[in-house]
Length: 372
Image (tube, rainbow, N blue to C red; front, side):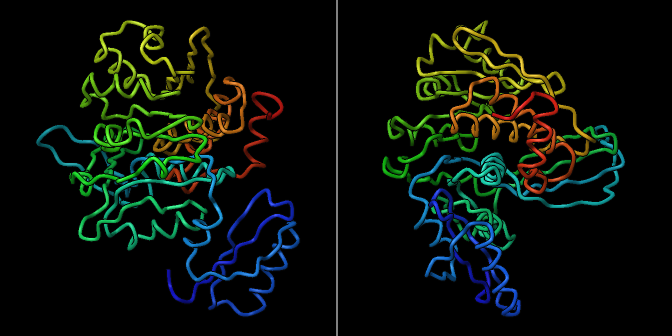
């Protein structure tokens, strides 16, 4: 963030929502005046404070949050290739692009765009700032006070090699996550959140660190993640003890059942006494959500076009979290997740393609009727 950037805090007249208006001094005075008038036109009032650092705005104003996302902040490098070669063969890279990603980052950004008050906790390298990821989160009102920056390290990266037909392979480069640094969150850091989303990022160490510190009324949503095959049974049992919700794709869930020596979803609820639902994404077949006494089948919502699946699962989880925060029924939570995922499939970069509420509402109404 340059010294020529200012951030104005504006809040609704009824104090129901705060937002940050970003003004560049390089813009002329009439641009500044126009932004202020626009704020008033939207039923916002300009506060008497002007901040040169948006972190102080967000940290000062957002004392209660809807969501804390704990997990990966990655730089996703997508390589378009002519083909994915066999072993000992060569493929051609046609072009590449880098996007902001990571499960926690995706869910935080998409949640903020839906209007949730969001904070994030992660461990990142110095390129978190240099890449623009830090400013990107701040512009979307995501509180990054719990992000630990290790200047001499690099952020984790995901390398995606994708053919023209959409088939792809992933490689995860841990970088800063190879370190054994802790988030150093205490009980006070974990209070005031309606939902705490914990992803697979360093999850064994992180969950152990947080065990016993997360207290009601905060709910815990655990995303199993693709690294579930590396986790021990003891760890998974400990996660079940603190989780209210669990989310996974079909392959992750099958691995989870094998590691736990379980044969059915019903047995999970016998171990996880706090569990309210288990959600399993089935790709093109939609998803299913299990409660202790019922199964909900959520259909897939067709996309206008299919460009990339990267981040679609995170979009589905974001829809679930939004519904949980706003006390929707389980079926409508899943439906919102399905609708949000359909938009993410239509463009590259999950954090670049979140729809506005108008588009979201229109598609939801088209497939499921009136939005709750």
